[in-house]
Amino acid sequence: MSTRAIEVRGLVKKFGGVAAVDHVDLTVERGEFLSLLGPSGCGKTTTLRMIGGLESPTEGSIHIGGRDVSGVSPNRRPTSMVFQDYALFPHMSVADNIAFGLKMRGIALAERRRRAEEMLEVVNLAGFGARKPAQLSGGQRQRVALARSLVVEPDVLLLDEPLGALDALIRRQMQSELHRLQRRLGLTFMYVTHDQEEAMAMSDRIVVMHGGRIAQEGVPEDVYRRPRSEFVARFLGECNLIPTTIVKREAPAIVAENALVGRFSVPATRVASGLGPGDRALAAIRPEDIRLGDLPGSIPGKVVERSYLGARTRYVIDVGGATIVAAEQSSGATVGEEVGIWWPEDAVSLVTPDSGSTPAGETRR
Image (cartoon, rainbow, N blue to C red; front, side):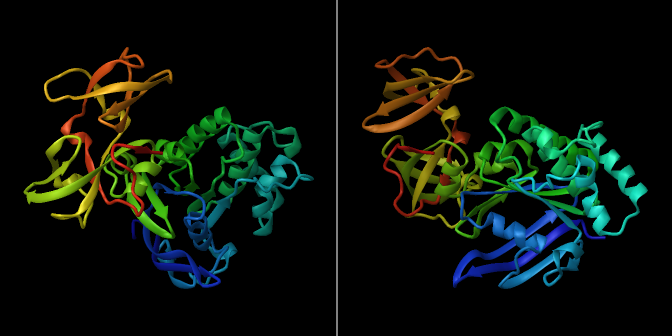
């Protein structure tokens, strides 16, 4: 049996001649928690809806569990979907909401009740079955929506920004709950979000989408630490982006140079594919990798802004007219103070610049 829960090939969706999804190839392994991450309009929700059968592809194929479901109706696919707005029936009890899908499948009343009670236990809502949705908090209503999707025992659970309507504290609690449920049940989760921290906290793998295409995919740490493009570098958090030129290949590294540090080497594994000698690139360095301290080889600068953020302090440092952002845990530097900055060699990635790239040393969020 194939280990792939989902496989899409050459997926295209056009609206009025505009490609919302543009030739996407994607696989999701059984039992994997995969997140589609990107800004509004990048194609992530349209991709999810095509997999769930709520949108028909213009081109391409969709296989779930090894079966081509491209022309199969949503109710005949081994998937279930959770939406941001819960979509609960206000006149029904919690238990009846959960059992609704079973009723539509012709499951007997006693079995529906039994399975609804089991799902209430799973989502930590035992004893809430007789209540109406209006009597629940937002987080509790989202748990009911999850239970309703899980009770029909789908092979794949599709989740479209399910936590978007919750406040920050409940959202974090539900992130932990979702991750726990996915691990406990061993289901395949495909999750759509525009929240970078949410995707990185929960996912086995992240697929970053931009302009209807996949910009980069991989485990969260690799995508964050080894971005391949300016878009990915700045979408997954604050990042220093320094205009750089590729000088030459010197296996197993690439030699590059910029106005800030002169010539330096970067392991080829941290260089975006397609970049070669003479090409423009951006040296991407996360603020938490910038160190403050007057050590040999450090670059002199001046603190122009300081923000205390609890676990870290954020510094904006002027370096010869360029701006570098650092995030330190314990430095006591103050505004106006002269400091040295440096970073480990393995903190630098060379990424492909987008059109209209950032000026030297400026950060993008």
